[in-house]
Image 1: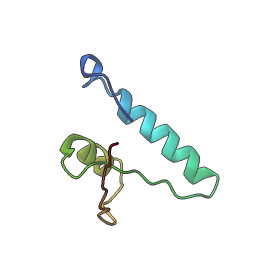
Image 2: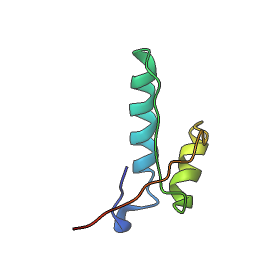
Image 3: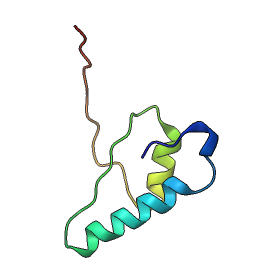
Image 4: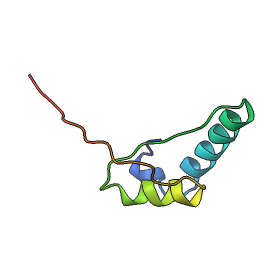
Length: 64
């Protein structure tokens, strides 16, 4: 979930993430999220919703 800086702090990402994760669980699937390790705000939000860090993924971004 990406939130424009002017709209952060209103709970939009929390509500959207919660509703979508609940719908995924209701159909019997497992919701998962990803975030850059440096994105402390996103990680804190996800953990407050009951998610936990499962693994670190190493990503390489290549450009032409």
